[in-house]
Image 1 (cartoon, rainbow, N blue to C red):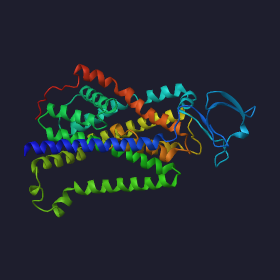
Image 2 (image 1 turned 60 degrees about the vertical axis):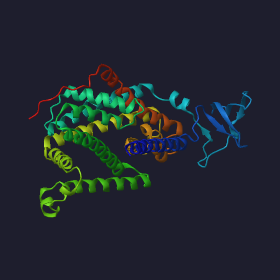
Image 3 (image 1 turned 90 degrees about the horizontal axis):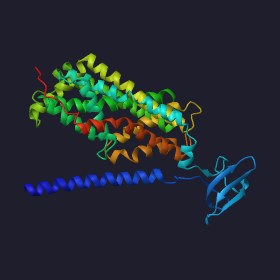
Image 4 (image 1 turned 90 degrees about the vertical axis):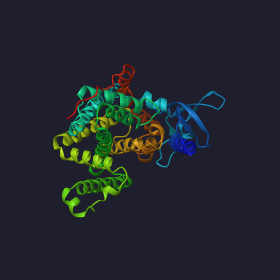
Length: 384
């Protein structure tokens, strides 16, 4: 019986891993459809050739024929799109070559305070539970966790598991520690969704994007009302059936999770500090990628800056859902859905998506040093 249970558990893991790979492959197939490394041009006779040079003054183009030979053709031979523009597909090389490298470096620099603000949020949340951690210990844990999130194939939840394990070893209040890690993730995603909703309501013009924003904002309002009512002493005394919790398995742990959540919500300085840190760090993280998008010379006309905050934030939220390794393909699919043709070419969008990953990767690399030196290990605490 025990052996059968182990086999079933292993089979479920393999099925789940297989489904994640299928989602990843399907999303990447959607995203990469039509992307090229080099520039290509479509002629009126239907031929698709590599574009070597576009000479607007001489009204000619230089292309590479199928046999590899160079040929100079009149611009009149180029097919046009529905909007009258030449049917030219710019590749990844062109997107990178035309980018402003100094602004890309500035985008990386803007992201620098994010992990330190994340660590401060960590400190606030554990202080509300009376779990003793120094700020430096929080910094080391966050860097190590981010390294597992962004530099390893574990995925964007691996760092949370890592932090939960080591904090639980540090304290006798293991349930409270695990609850705090979970609440830390909820606050991070919740504030990010709030910023996405605000950006959409303030300035987004795309009708479908505005509809998504209305759904997000309605969900946030509903979540706030639910939390306010569910954790209200008056509501509980009047409406919660007596003895309900006692009939639930793991009664003691559920009571402690409930108490830890209420303790955080009632500790206004710590809860407010955690939310404020999250607002600042999420804004900086989004601004870093928005600046990278500008550096890639994507379309920022007609006050589209709000669209970038909304869509990039949505892509990060989707990437946090463990349905694809590292959110690979799923976040790119979001960017393509809302940005292709209106904000940039497919190559520019993919370069922007790579910027999201590379900026996070760059500032997670110090976590490798923490992991290699064992700096994440915490000393047991003596709590009241």
